[in-house]
Length: 239
Image 1 (spheres, rainbow, N blue to C red):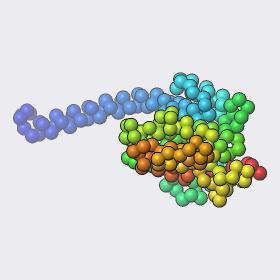
Image 2 (cartoon, one colour):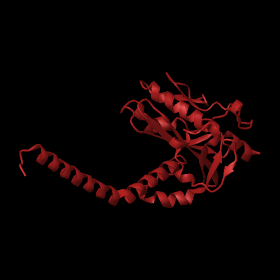
Image 3 (cartoon, rainbow, N blue to C red):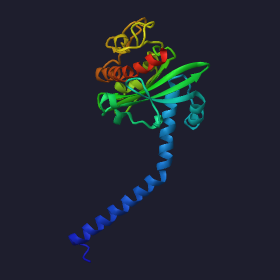
Image 4 (cartoon, rainbow, N blue to C red):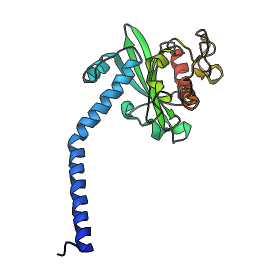
């Protein structure tokens, strides 16, 4: 075959592309199980972090089993759904469904004799998806801890949602207007980010990230959208 011909060039390129694709496919398949295991352990780490349990990824599974006593899937009307793998629920996919058709994952933890309800969240930042987990104390109102992550927020700006100073602001804040009243949409105020700052005495507000209004607003919207879905469930268990 003439090495200077177009046929030779195209044939060589096709063979090279096929070879590279085969190598990449082999690498993907050979590392897929490890990747999935790391992804699962990282999720466990983040859930545990909301209740103040910080563990290495290699210890995540054992600690998760120790502290997470129950995994529950509920509907937006507060009823519990059986036969669903709570841990593997894809929030991005659920959010595309009508509200009444969504299923909501909930992790019930026990630490030092206290019960915590850990709720997964998913929303939109400035550039791409943001997500996280929020732990409520047994009153279903007070925030014990929170953990945020993102796909593509700006370093030094929106990406600060992953930093401790931002997340610690949420500890002790409350999502209900009246702590003594039952959980309901009328009593729900969530916790919002406040541009320019807010006093620590504000039980429903935290300081927004300076110069990152869109990401801060995205966090506020994500909390409001997710938490309100769980109120019927908390109302039912409170009764």
